[in-house]
Length: 150
Image (cartoon, rainbow, N blue to C red; front, side, top):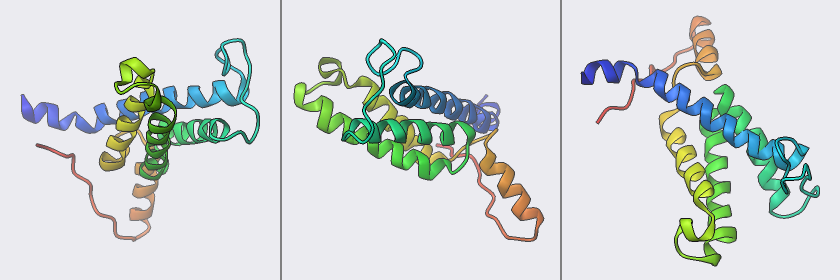
């Protein structure tokens, strides 16, 4: 049973990455483009250049899109995780100690999900793997990445 689950790990990780990236990008698109209800629920957008909301929205849209595609996953996830840690500690945490009290559950979950992707990489279905295969076909050496097991 464990062997079968371990062999499916890259695929489960790839699906996890795509879902997290899509949801994260949707947050940024709502804030920047006014789609999906917008920043205020009425189709509004965040004012350009406002700190930290506009910058967070750009990180959410670009970082989420890169994570969704599996392109530069580790770097995009690292920056996205840091943005969500900042959002939690500067915006949510001053309101109350626990995320359920201060409305910071989303920021905390995205922070930890993105941090997980920093350490695991893109998994299956990512463009990172496509470019790795092409570069190894051109004669460059690449390290084969094995799934993490406990």
